[in-house]
Length: 330
Image (cartoon, rainbow, N blue to C red; front, top):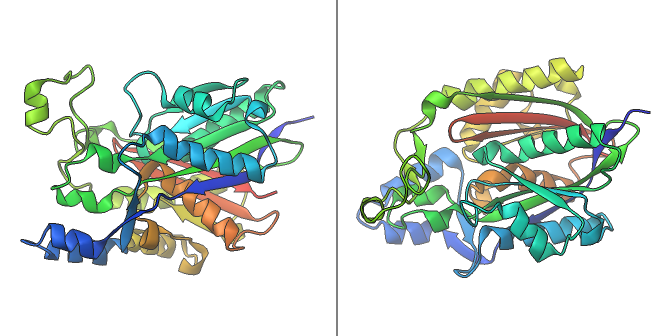
């Protein structure tokens, strides 16, 4: 019989240190209008920071534990961990290995997904494919985690975007979908717009790189709005075509939580009421690699997805990468 991946439980973690827009207005008191403009265009009102002694894997651990508890699974039940982030604990080894150790998932293999904020949908698609083709895989843990504020200059106004958080989903095989479709697209010509440009092999870390800020995340050039405003509807329609469903069949749409106005534009393009999109950026900030999964968990908790309901998840990350998946909820 065919094997399909299904999402049996989700988890989410938002740390406890609140950083409000008013606090940022105080920090950037010489030009508080920057915060005003970003608040108006994004809908973000606050973000949350982890303690200074935490790493990305610590955020991931909290979300993973919650997802496993909700699935009634133990860490040793996990066969595979897929972790998506672009704020890893280390350049190497993989953050998924660190999580495996902290979680006590001694029977699990692991790998990282590194396509920024498209990582969680990409991880779900990879896990679904592996479950479908490997009879030995029973329980796969997909995690998204983001601690980018730690890698940012606190005096850079782009700090407005960076909130810490993590999400997790437990996937297991079923004899009915579950997983419906995936779609991905990218354009590497934008690889120099936003990123951390020293510390890797293109430019190893050096005293000059640190002094000039290239070991911190830098917002070099704004992306054209059409990247998401046109890219997300294109991906969504590909999912519908490949998955054999109509847009009106979708119970809930979840997009990268970076600009509420972009989601409004995309929903209008799709011809679907905005009320069928779910947003959390207002209260959690932009949580990058974690935001799509965190929004999914929040929507489930608020009863916005019924059993059998179809959800479309689309993530968009620097580089740029975009990825989408469609699932029916169990």
